[in-house]
Image (cartoon, rainbow, N blue to C red; front, side, top):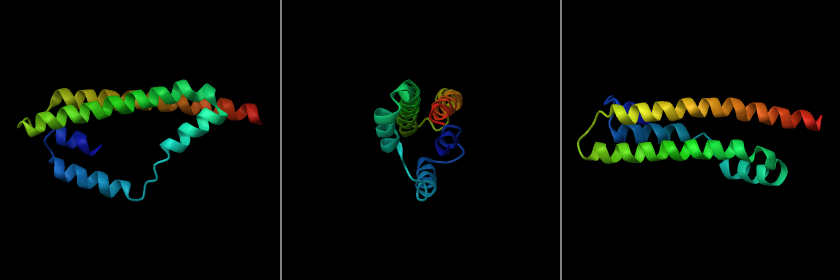
Length: 110
């Protein structure tokens, strides 16, 4: 994540934002579609999606808090870095559980 590099002082916010923009040009965002499909066809997957949303929001708060600190002159922010690292690790665990739940639901269709 580009913002982790900002938290360690390796890059500045402008560089991180350019990386995010460059990385997102070819990336399609399907979150609204995923929410709709789960709501219509697989409501039993909703708790997994809510966990993803919770961690996504947590990461957004970490970035916003770090940006305030950064703008106040605190260019290296270990607290934010560790919080972001924790959120990313949680997201990895949630991704594994979500993928398993999707496979379980798909096996019911076969």
